[in-house]
Image 1 (cartoon, rainbow, N blue to C red):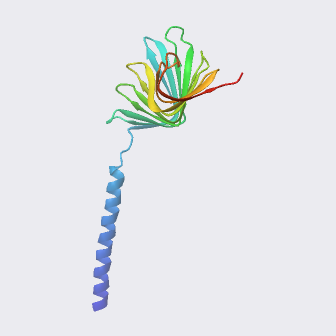
Image 2: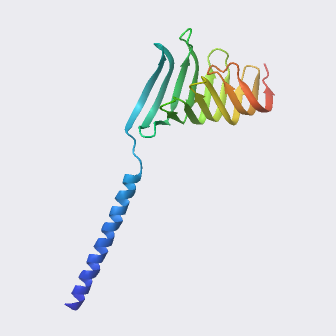
Image 3: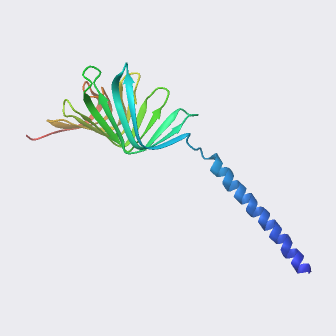
Length: 179
């Protein structure tokens, strides 16, 4: 009987410890922030005075209202349109992106590529930012620009979304393309 009482005490103590461990695990799960909204196959239209500025698509989006941030978690595709002609001027692809829901600024990350429709220029980098207030794309990361005549490598870049009037802040190499 004595051993039975001792076993029961150990059993009760161990059950209490398991319950505490379970409570800690549940607390950790609750501490991990969950999005307010979650969506798949998302398409968002950006307008200015009833004119389409851009169309954004992503396979998955998570919205965190308390932080005013939206995460686009896979296969981001953005088309930019001319305010005057309403024709597409360029498009961007990336692995993911983060959007500031207040400023509408965006940071695209992972295999970022921008291709201009009008001048056949391609920009490639790992991180590219969109400033909504300035209406420019920019990065301080390594970039590669491919034109019909040359490939330019460098660090730091700024441009209009159609890849015109671009600046490379530190050119590290130029490779001519043979015709």
